[in-house]
Each structure stands twice: as C-alpha cells, then as structure tokens.
Image (cartoon, rainbow, N blue to C red; front, side, top):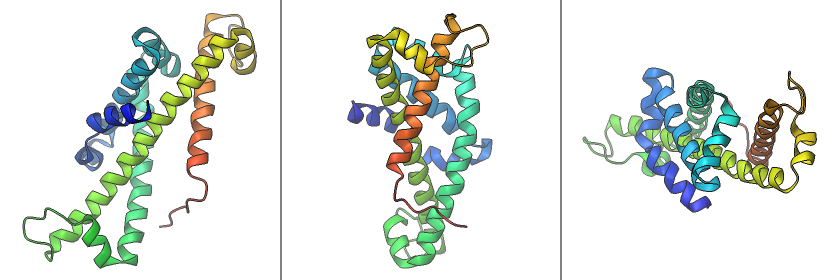
Length: 201
C-alpha cells in the first residue's frame, strides 16, 4: 500500500509545484495534497468508504476545508525546509551545489546554480514532508477504520467525545473517526521525527 500511495502522491505533487506555490501562499500545493489524500483514502478503503472517511475528517465541504487547513501546513513546511536547506548550504556550499545544483542553463559554476540548488532542495524537502503527511493520514484512516469495524461501541466510547448532540448521535461517530485519525497520524509523525534535529534560523 505504501508504495502505491507514494506513487499517487508523486504524480499529484510534482517537485516543481512545491516551491511554485509561493505565489498563492501554498494553496496550489495544498490542493494537490488534499487530492492525493482523498485518492489514497479511496484506494485504501474503497471508493464509498474512502469518500466517507474524507468527509469525516474535514466536514461537509471536505475538499475546501482540507485545502484551507493544509495551506497553513504548507507554509510552515516551506519555512522549515528553507531553514534546513540554508543550514546545509552554509555548512558545505560546494557539496550542496553538487547535490542540488543541476540543469542550470549557464553551467554549474554560474551564480544561478546556487539559486537553483537552493530551490530544488526546498522543493524536494517540502514534497517529502507533504508526502509523509498524506501517507500517515491514509494509514491512520485504515487503522481507525479497522478498529471501528471490529468494535463500534468501544471505538465510539474511546474517541467520540465533545459532540454537541451527544455520544449516540451520528456526529459522534464522525467525530470519533476524525479524532482517531488525527491522533494516530500525529503519533506516526512524532515517531518518524524522533532523533531528527530541529532546524534553527
């Protein structure tokens, strides 16, 4: 599943888009990330249940809400990626340019090489983070879907809290699923980032 999902995200999140989203605050990349997430859920859970899961996560206007929320995440990822790439570039300028500074029209020694290298580094780093986020969400949805199917009452009891219409309402079930996916995906992200140093400005 992970390989197949990675392929979906790779198709919908071309590397050039990750930095190109600067002009609209990352909304373009956020839209592609949400499309990849929805497609991944449908592939993982089936068309009907995948759509239902996407709505459970983001509400009635699911795609719009997903894009709105993800746009801020994309901005944050760009800031973090810029810090990471800047630190790598300053630490080893030649090695950085050799690793990232390719396909420059005026040659590898041109001033444009450095700029191209930095842009490619940021683009690839953001894309990797967004891809990981989509995969974590889809995998969490599978875990929560299976847990809910195995014992609906226990699942709702564990996750279906803070619902204005009560624990037995239809909204309680949606709330339960969304909370489960959010918490499970967050845990996966934290586990992946254990031991990774926090970038500094």
